[in-house]
Amino acid sequence: MPHYSVEGVDIAVPVYHFSETHYLPDAIVSPAYRGTLFSLTGKVNGGAFKGFAAGECLFLGAAGAKRGSGDWEITFRFAASPKGGAGV
Image (cartoon, rainbow, N blue to C red; front, side):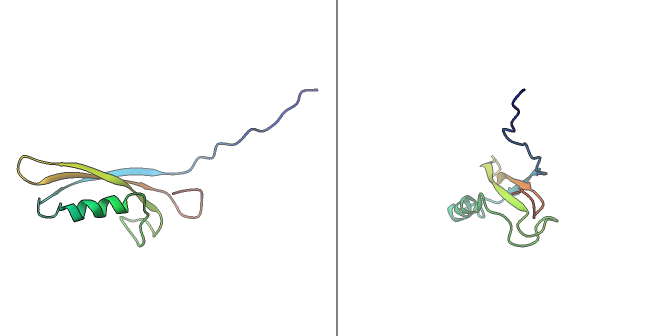
């Protein structure tokens, strides 16, 4: 008689990944601002944000560069998942 066992289960978790690109003046993108972005990376929202309830949107980080015109092009990345499940 064959021996069957369950090794594990894959659970699909609904996650919506999105990004936004913003153009910010050089005066705003200070070392303190970059430090704030660094410290917020990996955190979830504490209140409503972009249509998501508190705790549903994870900040994945930001990347960018200073453009020739003197402003910065920065892309902010997020992952949103409903609360109450195995989401973010």
